[in-house]
Length: 352
Ligand SMILES: Cc1cc2nc3c(=O)[nH]c(=O)nc-3n(C[C@H](O)[C@H](O)[C@H](O)COP(=O)(O)O)c2cc1C
Image (cartoon, rainbow, N blue to C red; front, side, top):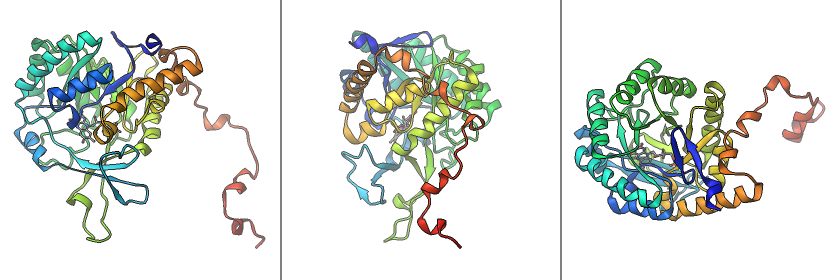
């Protein structure tokens, strides 16, 4: 049955559309190997770059999970939680880590999988140099993240939240023209038009784009009356899924079905992978749910997606964009006079 989950993503064939996203869970070789064993088609290793300040931030991270009433809950088992956190980068030297990723990527061939290197933009010349290093070390796939949530907070400039179409196009072009391996570009969701950023990434030579990066949030604590964890924080959760699906579908409409999109932000289950595929993603990245609930999240997502595809018939590939291509324009909707009355309190309808 596994064949029904295979998808093509640009020039790559993936055994399934489930990707282990970059995060602290894949900061070590053992974490990456656990994700490989769990069955992910691609594991994006923890991001790196040349910035010492970005690396040092790993010692200043913190993480918190909240339920829907904003009561803090245990981190473990928090897959359905609202997640607020600040993250840092791989503490090992960039070249050393890229060499380790290349070795892991060689192991991944046995599992018909890829281990991708991930670079976060700080200085562009260094990004180009590190992309070349990754390629010459043997890495087959590169993720280039120009859209972390933290660019406005990290005054050291060690991570970017790129919102300018022109700059993004130039950044992507510089990295893509320096290497022959496919480059997937990870975009911020903190933009008024993510589809335009995707178009710029495609013009710069990206093989695919990943959308949408998390947002910044602030949560005041009622007891201390101070911000939870002391700062502005990266904010994600299951609530983000419709936002991700919206931008997937809108980008598919803007760029056409030929340019591969990858969903991230809000996927917690195999059903969520199906939702993002239907919205136009060719594959789906999981991060928070793995950090809270372990690598089994990946295995469960694959099994559940397989069940869904079997139940609905066809293949995972055939799901891509099916909902996106049916999004109706408001101007086409039939009129239903007074229908809104079913959605207001009775007092609103009382005679005046
Ligand atoms: C704690 C944490 C660390 C992360 N670290 C990275 C990173 O190093 N590189 C990167 O590209 N994205 C990173 N991300 C973003 C995730 O890969 C993912 O795109 C995002 O969390 C949204 O997906 P999710 O809803 O499955 O968590 C991180 C996210 C979290 C929560």
